[in-house]
Image (cartoon, rainbow, N blue to C red; front, side):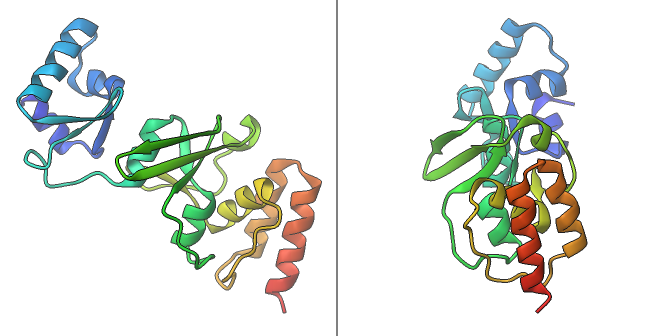
Length: 194
């Protein structure tokens, strides 16, 4: 099986240099860089950002998503805040930027897409409660996205809370160890019960 065939059958569509080393089973960095350069030259791979690659559209029929790319640019991270809230139908506003939770705050522009990383404290970030694995990326479920958002943006308003599991929302709020957030969640639950 060729190296490109290995990428074609892989579940990911965006690869870091380290991903390529693992998939291709190459430990020699010089050899790895030479192979990457070769595939870039023959238009089989494209460089998206420093150390981030994807198969070219002529090589693969499965394009990468902005969510997958966002998680590869800053690792570890997961989709949350406005992006997850909009995807789950909790807010109706459209946000062009992709918002992610990470261990650092940063903003990156790749092509015409802006990725905004919001820092969450380690103990919260590494708690997997309410984070769903979607194969090529991870996303906060509705309750986790609400808690992440209220943790950093206490005055954020929500448009549709009909599908929220209030018990799960209360449970997730406790992982932040933040009294203000827990009070905000209690108020939100009262609103949903009216």
